[in-house]
Image (cartoon, rainbow, N blue to C red; front, side):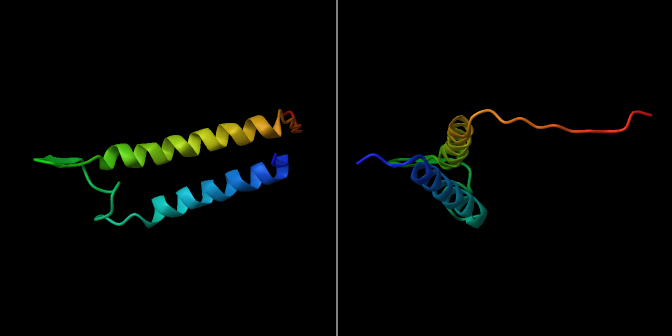
Length: 80
């Protein structure tokens, strides 16, 4: 089943909102909010997890821009 462009955009916006909510809700004890930890059999890549969320946001933004195509804007001002 092929999704329509509108459905794809809605899915991308929903995922973007979920990532933004997750980033905003990170408390100082959550995965992604702490420095990396490592020890015998214990490694949590907090920095990598948070970076991956920001990378995904960038990919979503780029994809939405690509789908929407070029935009034109006109501004008018007064020369002094």
